[in-house]
Length: 437
RNA sequence: GGAGAGAUGGCCGAGCGGCUGAAGGCGCUCCCCUGCUAAGGGAGUAUGGGUGAAUAGCCCAUCGAGGGUUCGAAUCCCUCUCUCUCCGCCA
Image (cartoon, rainbow, N blue to C red; front, side, top):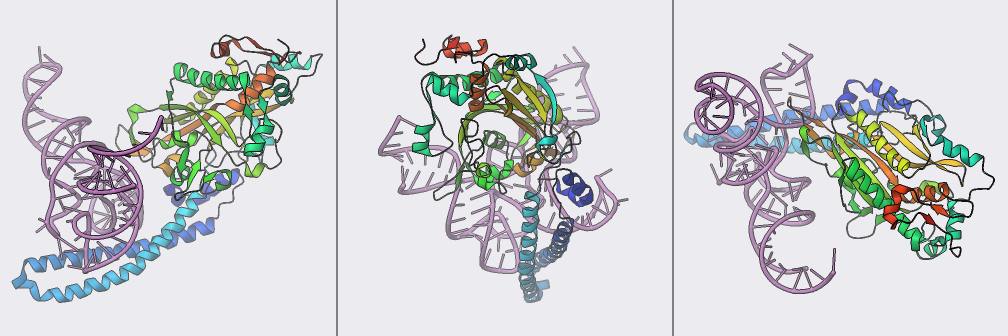
């Protein structure tokens, strides 16, 4: 949610900045809503003030019965009339406020000044590249690298058919060392962030109520991306660990000394992928269910932007440790997520497909989520202000598995295990295709 | 699932339908005192909103949430949510 006082002070300026991300701010509608709200509010408050006076006068008249007792019936009648008027005006005010609330929730965040302008992902800016030599070595190869689906078939243990039979499209069953490799990746990542980057490990609910998803910005706009559960009370499957982790500070007033909070969790994620019909149907790239290590930081206004660089670096360490080439991309205004002020995507190189694919997305929400969540901190000078929230994948487990298979394959289809991961696989250094060893 | 108790400010905790935005304590801030520390004395200390040039006034809202009764509700009634205790069941 945007800062309401900023909207009141400078709606034209807000319209310009929102225009950078291709969002058309309805200035006229905002002004009408605001005027209606203001009118209704002033009227209601004046009436309430009069009601207070009357009610107080009744009390005083009763206290001095002999002197003022005869005024009571008049006062009661006046009060009754006021109460009737108030009822009507309060209904008007409530309607006006509801309209404003809905309007505010529908507005995306303002892109930060450092975000490049552009209409879509073609205008994203590559900030840096890691593992260039590795990518070049793929180009000089005498044999053709396979994609992870082919490698999965070769090794066994990656079963899309069984998954489809029981769950439908966009699911997978992993078995044997594929399943173990998947588990090892998640454990390795979470351990690294906890022991080396100072994140607090969290275990969180996977079923969430509407309010939590409104807080982080998935609702009300993106309900179609979520899985909702049937039942007497609507709950949603988490689309990302961001939602429970960030909601940890909802409705909280934190001491500045406790910030920044660094939180991490390994959770499944469930996405309806409603807008992606027919896209990435092959393999494990785009699934309805996947695991992800999520990093969340809760910090101050001063530290917000720097925390984005730090958090992105934390995600990069994972890819470096797994020896996976990647690039860091600054999303342009047109590609920026709804709630984000600035986002870096980490795109891993997939030699089997000859392209980069997103494996992590690190975003700084400024105070946008915090206002929705009512998450504030107390400043030493006094006063409380909304926190800044950030999150990033550190990283997506399924896609990491894909990247690992494709990047560490040998000509015979065997997979070399990076040194950092070996302790999580009982010291195994190489996975041989089924039937070969 | 059954029976009962509860939800008040940063925290703990009092609160008769009107004079309670809310006693008292803790914490915090400032001042005084003591050579340092500890102890002591004094003052202050919620949030959001409206109207203001204003971080000045004045006004409104907020005592878990939402309804209701009333001229007037933290206080009475109803519904919901959550917490606690006991019983049952369970990984």
